[in-house]
Length: 140
Image 1: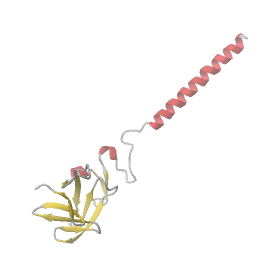
Image 2 (image 1 turned 45 degrees about the vertical axis):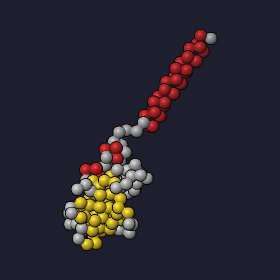
Image 3 (image 1 turned 90 degrees about the vertical axis):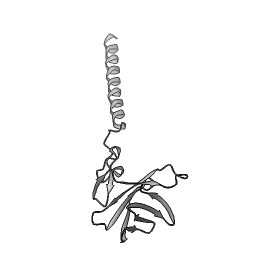
Image 4 (image 1 turned 120 degrees about the horizontal axis):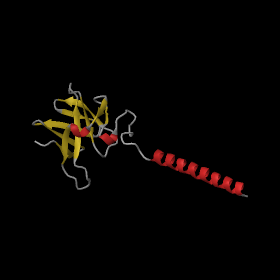
Protein backbone atom coordinates (compact mmCIF):
# COMPACT_ATOMS: atom_id res chain seq x y z
CA UNK A 1 0.00 0.00 0.00
CA UNK A 2 2.78 2.35 0.98
CA UNK A 3 4.65 1.50 -2.21
CA UNK A 4 1.63 2.21 -4.45
CA UNK A 5 1.06 5.53 -2.68
CA UNK A 6 4.70 6.46 -3.38
CA UNK A 7 4.24 5.49 -7.04
CA UNK A 8 1.15 7.67 -7.32
CA UNK A 9 3.01 10.62 -5.79
CA UNK A 10 6.00 10.17 -8.13
CA UNK A 11 3.69 9.91 -11.15
CA UNK A 12 1.80 13.04 -10.05
CA UNK A 13 5.02 15.04 -9.64
CA UNK A 14 6.25 13.88 -13.06
CA UNK A 15 2.93 14.70 -14.68
CA UNK A 16 2.84 18.17 -13.13
CA UNK A 17 6.43 18.92 -14.09
CA UNK A 18 5.72 17.92 -17.70
CA UNK A 19 2.69 20.20 -17.79
CA UNK A 20 4.75 23.03 -16.35
CA UNK A 21 7.45 22.60 -19.00
CA UNK A 22 4.86 22.39 -21.79
CA UNK A 23 3.09 25.47 -20.49
CA UNK A 24 6.36 27.43 -20.40
CA UNK A 25 7.24 26.29 -23.91
CA UNK A 26 3.80 27.30 -25.18
CA UNK A 27 3.99 30.70 -23.48
CA UNK A 28 7.43 31.47 -24.86
CA UNK A 29 6.34 30.37 -28.34
CA UNK A 30 3.42 32.83 -28.16
CA UNK A 31 5.47 35.77 -26.84
CA UNK A 32 6.86 37.72 -29.81
CA UNK A 33 10.56 38.47 -29.69
CA UNK A 34 11.37 42.16 -30.20
CA UNK A 35 13.04 42.61 -33.58
CA UNK A 36 11.75 39.28 -34.86
CA UNK A 37 9.17 40.95 -37.09
CA UNK A 38 11.17 40.88 -40.31
CA UNK A 39 9.24 41.19 -43.55
CA UNK A 40 9.97 39.29 -46.76
CA UNK A 41 12.91 41.61 -47.45
CA UNK A 42 14.37 41.34 -43.94
CA UNK A 43 13.21 44.83 -42.84
CA UNK A 44 12.37 45.09 -39.12
CA UNK A 45 9.09 46.98 -38.78
CA UNK A 46 9.37 47.37 -34.99
CA UNK A 47 12.56 49.38 -35.59
CA UNK A 48 10.75 51.58 -38.14
CA UNK A 49 12.17 49.96 -41.26
CA UNK A 50 10.27 49.19 -44.44
CA UNK A 51 11.36 48.08 -47.90
CA UNK A 52 12.23 50.73 -50.48
CA UNK A 53 12.03 49.53 -54.07
CA UNK A 54 13.81 52.67 -55.18
CA UNK A 55 16.83 52.17 -52.89
CA UNK A 56 16.60 48.38 -53.02
CA UNK A 57 17.10 48.28 -49.26
CA UNK A 58 15.38 48.77 -45.93
CA UNK A 59 14.76 52.43 -45.02
CA UNK A 60 13.09 54.38 -42.26
CA UNK A 61 10.54 56.51 -44.14
CA UNK A 62 10.41 59.12 -41.36
CA UNK A 63 14.08 59.88 -42.03
CA UNK A 64 13.28 60.88 -45.63
CA UNK A 65 11.58 63.99 -47.06
CA UNK A 66 8.43 64.68 -45.03
CA UNK A 67 5.23 65.92 -46.65
CA UNK A 68 2.58 67.23 -44.27
CA UNK A 69 -1.09 66.45 -44.77
CA UNK A 70 -3.23 69.29 -46.08
CA UNK A 71 -6.57 68.22 -44.57
CA UNK A 72 -6.90 65.42 -42.02
CA UNK A 73 -10.65 65.67 -41.35
CA UNK A 74 -11.20 62.18 -42.74
CA UNK A 75 -7.92 60.68 -41.54
CA UNK A 76 -5.67 60.75 -38.50
CA UNK A 77 -2.62 60.69 -40.71
CA UNK A 78 -0.31 63.67 -40.50
CA UNK A 79 2.48 62.98 -42.96
CA UNK A 80 3.72 61.11 -45.99
CA UNK A 81 7.37 60.47 -46.76
CA UNK A 82 9.24 60.76 -50.02
CA UNK A 83 12.41 59.48 -51.67
CA UNK A 84 13.59 60.79 -55.04
CA UNK A 85 16.32 58.79 -56.74
CA UNK A 86 19.69 60.42 -57.36
CA UNK A 87 19.19 60.39 -61.14
CA UNK A 88 15.74 61.96 -60.71
CA UNK A 89 14.07 59.27 -62.82
CA UNK A 90 11.68 57.99 -60.14
CA UNK A 91 10.16 58.86 -56.79
CA UNK A 92 8.77 56.67 -54.03
CA UNK A 93 6.07 57.78 -51.62
CA UNK A 94 5.26 56.10 -48.29
CA UNK A 95 1.68 56.55 -47.07
CA UNK A 96 0.32 54.96 -43.90
CA UNK A 97 -2.88 53.96 -45.71
CA UNK A 98 -0.95 52.09 -48.41
CA UNK A 99 0.53 48.69 -47.48
CA UNK A 100 3.33 49.17 -50.01
CA UNK A 101 5.16 52.26 -51.17
CA UNK A 102 3.88 54.09 -54.24
CA UNK A 103 6.25 54.35 -57.18
CA UNK A 104 6.10 57.39 -59.45
CA UNK A 105 7.94 57.85 -62.75
CA UNK A 106 9.58 61.04 -63.96
CA UNK A 107 7.41 62.67 -66.66
CA UNK A 108 9.01 66.10 -66.91
CA UNK A 109 11.19 68.46 -64.91
CA UNK A 110 10.09 68.45 -61.24
CA UNK A 111 7.12 66.17 -61.95
CA UNK A 112 6.51 62.48 -61.26
CA UNK A 113 3.33 60.46 -61.60
CA UNK A 114 1.56 57.14 -61.91
CA UNK A 115 -2.07 56.33 -62.76
CA UNK A 116 -3.33 57.68 -59.38
CA UNK A 117 -0.83 60.18 -57.99
CA UNK A 118 1.16 63.18 -59.17
CA UNK A 119 4.17 64.64 -57.38
CA UNK A 120 5.26 68.17 -58.25
CA UNK A 121 8.15 70.25 -56.97
CA UNK A 122 7.50 73.99 -56.98
CA UNK A 123 9.85 76.53 -55.39
CA UNK A 124 11.85 73.65 -53.88
CA UNK A 125 8.81 72.16 -52.09
CA UNK A 126 7.09 68.90 -53.00
CA UNK A 127 3.31 68.49 -53.34
CA UNK A 128 1.49 65.14 -53.64
CA UNK A 129 -1.80 65.20 -55.54
CA UNK A 130 -4.38 62.45 -56.09
CA UNK A 131 -6.83 63.24 -58.87
CA UNK A 132 -7.47 66.96 -58.41
CA UNK A 133 -6.97 66.92 -54.64
CA UNK A 134 -3.78 68.14 -52.98
CA UNK A 135 -3.08 65.64 -50.20
CA UNK A 136 0.37 66.43 -48.83
CA UNK A 137 2.82 69.31 -49.14
CA UNK A 138 6.36 69.83 -47.96
CA UNK A 139 6.79 72.75 -45.55
CA UNK A 140 8.34 75.79 -47.14
